[in-house]
Length: 436
Image (tube, rainbow, N blue to C red; front, top):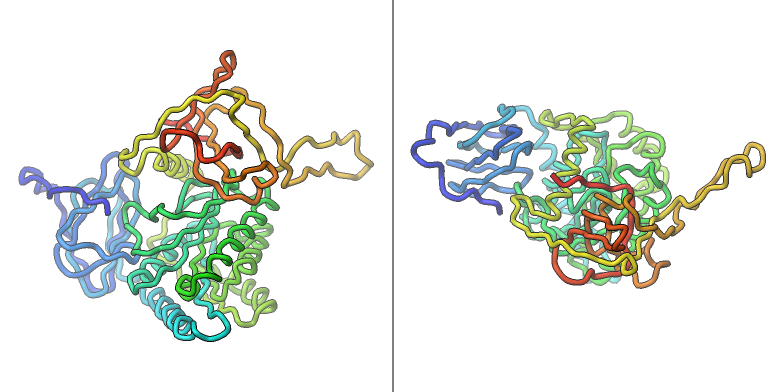
């Protein structure tokens, strides 16, 4: 957990703001843009996204961080630092959220109790859906943290390529959650299973997105088949906010592919009624549940989202508080095998029959020529041992190209650790990052 060290010195005591929270209320905070904010629990009990705050210990949140401190029974909180906004709310949907958790917990217990039966039991597979900025990530974290607090190890599946809750944006990924999620540092990265899509919206290559969702689901299915504990704990799946047209199709595809048996719909009546009709038509045993969105959810404009993506990428290489030291490495052009998935040369309109549209293969592998276009590109290091395995392989991690020397035919790149890369095939999408 990211603790903020000793309490503020006596000289700055006047800067500390104390807030008393009544039972079942929450303190909603947006940290200022320039400096971190420290908070501590003085008395009572409180939690952040489902994870309990330790008493009398300062937690330090970085600039621009948004979070809420909720208390079931009442609490006193100290805040030290600047906030963009902070206010107390006594109307929250937390009771309905914790009721959902209780129902999921009962299903996990039933699955565990019948684990000796001939048919392998299945715990809850929960998928959280809703429009952009409806609180999906927050609810997902709460359900995972509450389950972990009860001793379960649920699997967190993140299909939101625009945000990247587990690793950098542009990926779909999964990881077991063994402890309540740290309110500052987020999801632990010990054992993530990551597939690189390479773009921040599925519209860049819808078929590839579907294929990677299937690959992730099949890999988890194999893991579950040999692990009754994980199977009983189930999974919680976070989704993107694109819910219309192709986005809606992709939601249905995810529900079907992961065999979700609980669909939680946040904050939209139309989406709830559509899914209830369409999902139950295919599988009447799925529970489609409508939940109220939290009043603390903040709308984020495209500029903020871009900034957040950049911060997530920076965190991958440097850590949340610059506590990691990435390594600059140099490679020859001839040592790097870079591929792009999808697209490829299209026939010009003039060469096609009248009325026909040029079609590019969405899963086609195209070798990438190394040139200055690679500058500031984030590349995934694939576990594939042959090029034809790249589409179906997960990735070991990422590198960031900082310099391309055409004359010397050398590429300088940043990697999280020194030494040789864990794979020789690199995958390129449209993901870039400008180190600042």
